[in-house]
Image (cartoon, rainbow, N blue to C red; front, side):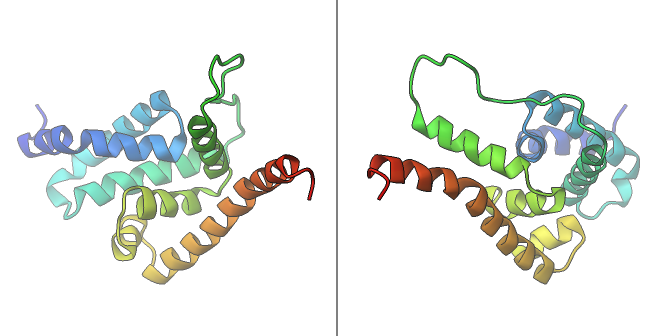
Length: 165
């Protein structure tokens, strides 16, 4: 039977950890698998851990980094054909997730932990095992890259609306 402290940790943190896993990989099913594997890796080391939340997040990032190095076998997309309504918020959010998935693993992890989970630079650095300076520079480069990936489409849409001027 699992340790009661570990079971309590899982019950309290599962939803937040699952959200992080989803943001890192973009698929609910994959996120559940990644989190389950990370929790399975944490259980044998549970009694020796000082920061279990950070450990589980780091295992998830490392696991996904290893997976992303392998060849892609299938491409999952949130965009479905023939949608009935024109929900621009959905399209913008989907465009952002698509752009986020194009970033390198560590850069994506920094952005998710830093801005989506609203973690400090120091917390993000501890989770990822890097310096706070690395978090700062990676976040800066990541945000700049996201702007490059998202803004060209918006700029061309604006020029179309404005008659190409």
